[in-house]
Amino acid sequence: MIMATQKITFSLSNSLSELERLSELLSLIGEKWSLPGKIILQLNLALDELFTNVVSYGIEREPDQEVHFTIAHREDEIEIVVSDGGQSFDPTQAPVPDLNLSLDDQPVGGLGIFLMRQYTDNIEYRRENGKNIVTLTKKI
Image (cartoon, rainbow, N blue to C red; front, top):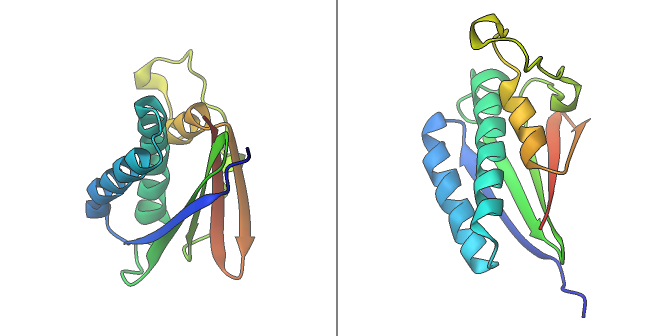
């Protein structure tokens, strides 16, 4: 039997104070779809990083902007599409950090995107109609 795709969409305002709401929504979605806690934790960490980057660097000067999420559950994966109207930024092009460097020698930035890569199976980016569209896929 093939499970039909289930989808949930929501938007968050352009504020880091929305991180708690994002976490709460992910927990509710995890319960609704009976997802393992480990999967929800990993998705929460990845989306926390992505949302923080969007708010802090992409749309920080545009307070009326929202970040839009579509989360789809298929038989064996979760797909999350995050879109915003901020500055163009492709997280798939970020360099892989040198993990052999000490914390003091690490350049600022880049570790969050590294974590996004670690906690998801695929990240895609496209720019369409003035919007950043990032698609994260996680096998379950």
